[in-house]
Image 1 (cartoon, rainbow, N blue to C red):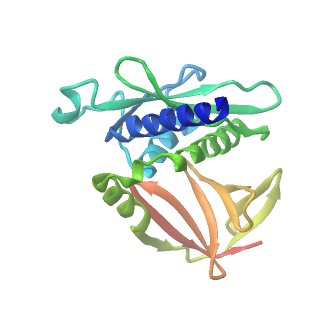
Image 2: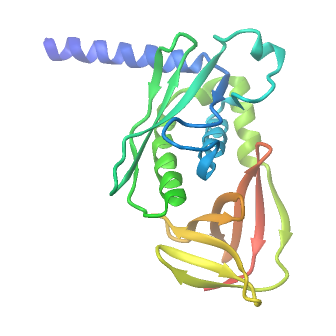
Length: 233
């Protein structure tokens, strides 16, 4: 009987919890997280904003000039925070959503990485933490669902790389060089074959293989841009 009562209370709490998050259309991401020294260090704030958009929120930085419909009320949006509980040996990140009264609406599972390079480790841990958002009902709202479809389905081949690029092994991945040789980008292994976390100058995204062809894909203005590349491994 106690188990049944506990289960009913748990389900009721979970339903209310998901619905409370689903009530929100907008999200605010800080330009700097407390555990980092600089604004958008390792582009972690930018990645957080992009992932919030991926899961259906219309998202702004706290330094952005907001449209009046969003700025006129503090309580029509969720406030996003990323918290670090890692140590010298591993990176551990958790995503927390709060309302205007500082009430926690959602806490993600902990994303982990043992990569030594901070930018890679933070990227991996944050993406893993955001997998918890799959359990939310955000995508069911009609207006949010429409935005999600645009983000996912709007692929544009930006350009073909005319010259062949070459992959040189580095720790946990490869550096992609041209014939100069100049380092064009760096890519790092994931748990998915033929899918790498990729960094090209200030842009971060993924390098994926589709139909025996490599594509560098990343978010730009809430759309997914895909660059076709000739790479020899």
